[in-house]
Image (cartoon, rainbow, N blue to C red; front, top):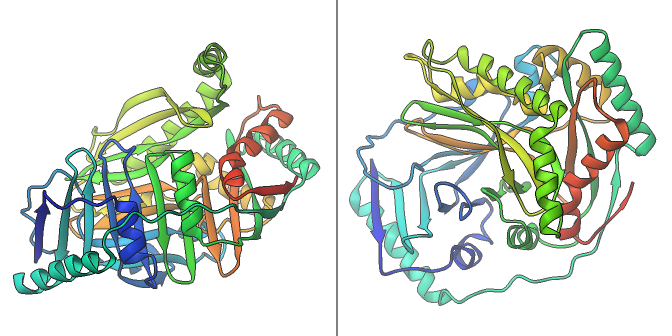
Length: 429
């Protein structure tokens, strides 16, 4: 049964709470949502697990009659493997996705300066015991402000050098010329050894590059650090949304030049056509699990500006069909069209052989799925994935017949810039 309590006179910075209470645990997560349209950050932990198909994901269904200003509820925290999505399309051998089973969490309302404790417990006394343990642990640590500030130096290598990447762009265009695809999302990866705790990277990244889906998930053997700007899938009371991003330009420190760049992006026919192709793909994916005639394009070609880039974002909305579940809806959209190309099946089939390695968690999706079916999953882009001492950063971009190979290469580098700078990276391009 779900229990919750709002702590109106008890406020600590969630950065400090995570460091004090959760950073040393074997598994934990911190979804920093200060920049989100629903500004409620979520911190918790739980039991980790792995899975290789959506059919393995099971949700509990506790009674939920709570009236809360946020949609998060206990359930699952997941990071979906891109190749798992390919396997459900009959391509490749699949991949291992990661999860955490969550029965309790802390939710921080940044506008109200309030904290909610929420949990799925057998009884109210069990919930009260957990609540008091939280108070005690905060009292013991003092809730002091803990600073994370460390100079990081990292050497990275890229799996595709300039010549190889440019050739891959040309190969994509040849595939398009044959009529096999309209657009292809070509990717590669940077790899290296991280000489610091991923927590340090996360705190530095979200300070320097605020984003709506800033996240840190520690699955135990693997850590995911992300400043993703892109919503893959959201559901709330059977209403679903997806907001693909296609179209990128660099920011300028000169205000007039920055405005000129953003206006050029909004008027660029190639970028608009690329965005529209992915919107159509998402709409088609939604029709398989949505109520008839409920799929609509809520926003088209919306300019969103982040710390280092301008991007074009569109939003598709639909109502989940009766008899369908949130898990089925996520599976229907996965892998996301913005990271595959169109048509999806031919695009991913070609890319599986054209790219230098399996993508793994990169270009999959991560976030939470509540037991009541509500969810929020972001695209695994602008992300660092650490396993052991090795880490990877995936980067790429959409290729069309009108793409300029050199410009695509520079855009790929631009998308890596924020993460590379945060870890003091020197890249052998």
